[in-house]
Image 1 (cartoon, rainbow over the protein chains, first blue to last red):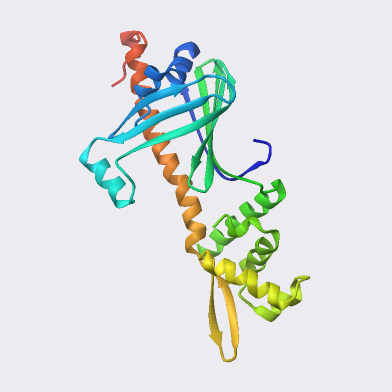
Image 2 (cartoon, rainbow over the protein chains, first blue to last red):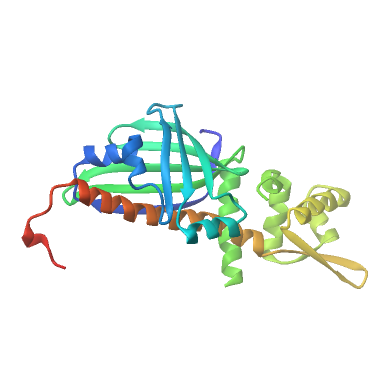
Length: 153
Length: 108
């Protein structure tokens, strides 16, 4: 992970008034994940989740609704595909990080849970990473992107 | 596209082109490399779809193309939407699995 640097990232936060143990279970067991991981129109079947650093998280995502099937076709992708990720951080019930190869880039998904007065706060970060880019270069690239976007606006 | 940017010199060229379009000769003057080297980097960036050129009289002017820059952000934005949809499912599933809250909690 150390030589991978973030190029772009998105962060999503939510708060759930539920026990942290149940949340962790839904995020880290095959049955739990399958119950919610498929976005609208897709089902997910978890073949393997080996909950340790270096462990494999493998699932098949299948478009089931006609609309989802058509959307995948339009993008030139099969209706069903297998995604194999590698866990890089496992700290029950607070933190889970995994890397997924997505074409030439890597997607790093990091989720953290912390208990607070209103419930469990989830912070999810999805980041496009590229091995071999130095931190400075990635930062420069990011700021360049921002400036370029401003110029287009 | 990211492959094309793996080279620090090419990132430098992109940085310069971010400010304004450039002639090859002007780029070569701003960088500690020969014009042939600049041309080679520009060719790679052009093949990656990141820069385009036009001819002005006898000279060739290079500028950045907008599309690939938008694609990278769009790629991640797509994943954000996928996750938003997933997390909505997650919330529904969580509600199914937690004891129903007291009726005073209902506001809908």
